[in-house]
Length: 341
Image 1 (cartoon, one colour):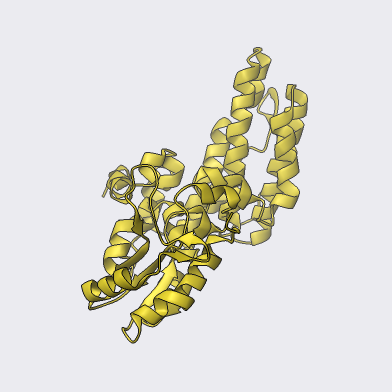
Image 2: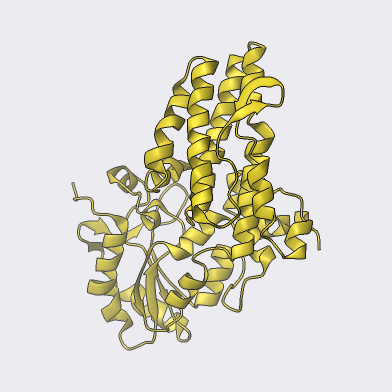
């Protein structure tokens, strides 16, 4: 059996040892970007059982067809024991060295070309996983001097967009944090657990926002969260909240987690600090953070009138969690109509 090596390592070696010589003097850039566990660094031996092999992009400005033809005819059958041409499911058996100008590749993978600049609407309608597909992975050669500036420009949201997304994420917590206790009070244990899981997911996603890290699609959410600084403090109480078999234990663990996240928010100095401790939900015996205070603190720092006019529904990732939305750039951009004019 061929020894597994991470996909990015395989792609880099394939470019340096094979593809670069075929491309020759043609001005180009080369990278492994886009969709895939290897782009995020989460691929394992299991990944190799499905559509696995050398995969990279070669970006050129001219001579696209000629360069593609040279690569097609010059590639070996195997590289380090892996077939160079492979298919899976209903995908045909072909090689996976994509030869394309950068603009069309961006249009296909993001739904638009961000190099002239990103509007606020662009930021809100571009799923984080797609932004990860451009900012993660690896660049092997940037002969066109375009990839590194592009990746730097997409590294994170502008400050006011970031603040608005934080406000929207705190708003999600504010809307449901007291329901965990209310459902338990009426004997709805399943409902209480479901709501605890929803809050745990929202807290995890809030940690990504606080640490200026795009969140991946759900398969790798926990793995990526484990790499955040917050995981050491927030991860354990979230695990206890999800494992709890009674409401008092669930509430205690959730309180510990949300207080830790609130302290991390204050430590950023991005907004005026808010009290990071739980308290009763009005006169009801459910202890919650009352996250609205953090929503207001974020909104107080936003001067953009358009952002301030929007309902607090968040970006496309906060508004929808359908894979068919978040993996389809044209569709996710069409949903931008929810933000009005």
